Image (cartoon, rainbow over all chains, first blue to last red; front, side):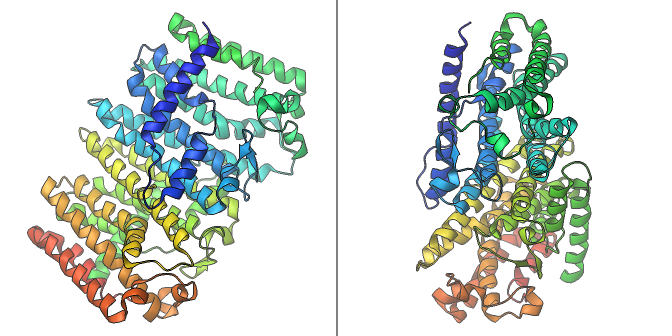
Amino acid sequence: MDLKAYLEERRSLVNRALAAWLPAVRGPAFRVVQAMHYSLFAGGKRLRPILCLAAAEAVGGGQEEALPLACALEMIHTYSLIHDDLPAMDDDDLRRGQPTCHKQFDEATAILAGDGLLTEAFYTLAAAAPRFQGREAMLLEVQELLSEAAGYRGMVGGQMLDLMAEGRRITLKELEIVHRLKTGALLTAATRAGALAGGGSRRQVAALTAYGERFGLAFQITDDLLDVEGEAAEMGKAPGMDEKRQKATYPALLGLEASRQWAGHLVQEALAELEPFKERAAPLRELARYLLVRRS
Amino acid sequence: MDLKAYLEERRSLVNRALAAWLPAVRGPAFRVVQAMHYSLFAGGKRLRPILCLAAAEAVGGGQEEALPLACALEMIHTYSLIHDDLPAMDDDDLRRGQPTCHKQFDEATAILAGDGLLTEAFYTLAAAAPRFQGREAMLLEVQELLSEAAGYRGMVGGQMLDLMAEGRRITLKELEIVHRLKTGALLTAATRAGALAGGGSRRQVAALTAYGERFGLAFQITDDLLDVEGEAAEMGKAPGMDEKRQKATYPALLGLEASRQWAGHLVQEALAELEPFKERAAPLRELARYLLVRRS
């Protein structure tokens, strides 16, 4: 299959759905909606929504049900980027080569835009209820796993740990916990939610959840490798930032070669989970393989 | 009825439920959970949860279903206070006589604690699903209205407007929009959610929603009056802050006497909505009357 064409088609499907869920409304509080828009349409790869849609496809489900979940995932992801970039957090001025939300607007607006997107994710799930008639309990199960992945048991906890770890040496075990919470939890929720929405059996849901876990960790390791080896122009941000900030990374703790090997091993494990799905899992298969060659 | 005893009993019911939903867990990211706890148990009046429970009672519903909704409302309210107090927003050092979250912890932790509480509100709703078997569609309706009240269509939009209005003269009409979004939306959602969870008819839900709207506006007017007339010791915060900050208030725009009269008129309208509920609405009735004599 042509992964590039597939990704482009999915990305534009997701972008159209996001634009429909969050129209560029006017109205009294337009400034915060503008800021939400600015960050939501700042050129994201839409990886989480695409994983969600591909997992629904793998179990033979339609995109109609998975699409609002995919949008909710991207809103949660974008809110977390806006808040993580704030001066009190990672204090980043650029994201994907463009000013971060608080630089483009101001700090108060960025805090509110993040709050608005996080809330809108749960609004989107609730407002999608008519597509899930007779399956409302499943929709609530998806909501439970998304809020678990986003809150203090997941991303919020991971960001807290990451801040607490700054400036001190952490172990490989601790680094793994940070990443599992900070990025792994939502990536895993993406495939799990897609499998549920697509009507997968318990066994299928478990396999795609396991795929998501391996994918999430491999994603983070290759992200760290990119920071060491990548080129600014392709990445849209400056490489070498982790070292400058004395952030713990896999290459720093394990070395480059062992990190590469481990990522390869995780991708093999992820691929093994996909075997029962045959051709329907082709996109998930290509996405996992792509991790090992990605340049941005 | 003895309103004071009623409020105390309800408050402790809500506090026990909140403590059960958010136990003071240890674990790697304990710092953010501590901060969530700190603000959630900083002596709030639990007005929104109590309104929700009282509305469920008014339609003859049990407390079992309304209680998780009540907890979610208080988590949303507490998150909004934490974020509104941040230096980039209202920059407040004290809340109910105690250091605000970012003063007690730090700014990053406070941002994350707010994010964590907002997310936990939606987790609480989803995890309450087993209490709503066969009524999952209603639970999703409640979620839709809570997220609508919390997000850019409600509180987030109201706070944005409030910040945009700082330092310039606004009209009474604009002030009303700010308050309807910033505080009114969630108070209205509280009675509406309680009425829905309690199994109220469409007509009953509409009446208790209208009650909530009047209550919300009257609450804000009496809040402004308190800021002019209140005593610091009773309020737990310094009076006269609105004037110092040149914030638009009802007394400033309408005068003291007209503001008092308008609050009285709104309370009468709220009471009229309660007539069909007879004795079951006694707590809601006393709560509305109390607005006119409250000292904190």
